[in-house]
Length: 372
Image 1 (cartoon, rainbow, N blue to C red):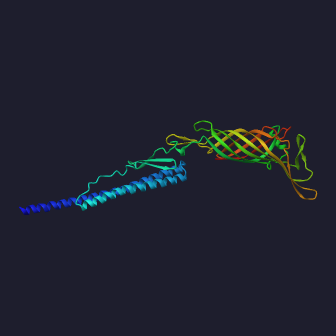
Image 2 (cartoon, rainbow, N blue to C red; image 1 turned 60 degrees about the horizontal axis):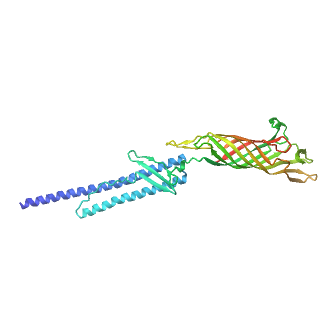
Image 3 (cartoon, one colour; image 1 turned 120 degrees about the vertical axis):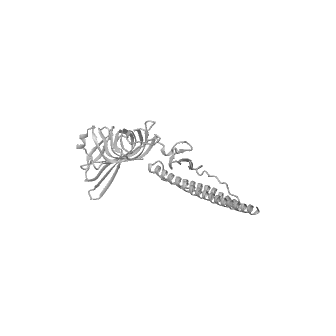
C-alpha cells in the first residue's frame, strides 16, 4: 500500500512539474511574441505617418521645416511607446521568472498595445497635429490639422489679400493729339527711350469666397526717359517748352523725369483654385492667365535734361540741366496688362499732356513682373 502511495505521489509530482514547465514556456513565448508585435506595430505606424507627412509636403500643404519637425515628433513619440510597452512586458517576464523560482506560475493577460496608438497628437509651437490609425487595413486616416488658437488648418488658410513686388521696363514715346500715327513723325527715338518702374502692390479678392476677380492697388516709382533724335534738345521758352536744334553735334540728348505713382487695377486671375478632399477650397493666384485694367495717378519728383557733346575745342562735355521744363506736376492715366503667371505685357497711357500748353501725351509699352 505504501509503495502504491509513493508511486502515486511521484507520478503526480512529475505531472505537476511537467505542466508547470509547459505553462512557463508558454507564458515566455507569449511575452516574446507581444514584444515582437509591439515593435513591429510601432515601426509600421511610424512609417505610415512619415509617408503621410511626405504627401503633405509634396502637395504644398506644409513647409519643409514643418515636415522635418513633424517627423522628429512622431519618431520620438514611437520610440517612447516602444520603450514603455516593451518595458511593461519585461516587467511581466521578471515576475514570471520570480514566480517560477518560487514555485508559482504567473497568470498573465494580453496587454492592449494599441490603446494609446489609435490616436496620436503632437504639438509644434502653437500648432497641434492629430493622426488616426485604422488597424483593420493598416491605412492611415488623418483628422483635420488644426490650430490651437483658431482651430483652423493653418496650412490651408486662404488669404484674401496678398502682396507683390512689381518691376516693369520697356520703351517710351509720345502721341500728338492721341493719334497713334503721330509715332511715325515723332521727334523721339523709339527704342532708345526707356522707362523703368519699381513698386509694391496689394491684391485683394473681391468676393468673400475664392474666385477670379481682384482689386489691385499699390505704390510705385517711375523713371521715364525720352531721347530726342536729329541733334535736338528741349528749350524752355517762358510757359512753353520747345524742341530746337543744338549748335554742336550731340552724343546724348535725354530728358528724364521721375514720378511717384499710385496704380489701381481690376484684375481677372484665372488661376485654378485648390480643392481638398473635404471640399475646402483654397484661393490660388498668379498661376495662370491674368488680365488687369485700371489707371494711375501720381506726381513728378524731378526733371533733368542730360546733354553730351564736344565743344569747339574738342573737349567732351556732359551737361545736366535741372528744371521742370513746364511739365505737369500731377500726372494721371490709364494702364492695362495681360500675361501668364508673373509675367505680363504692360501698356500705360497718360491722359494729361506731358508739357503744359501742348497735346503731347506719354505712352509706354513693356514687360511687367508681379512677384508674390
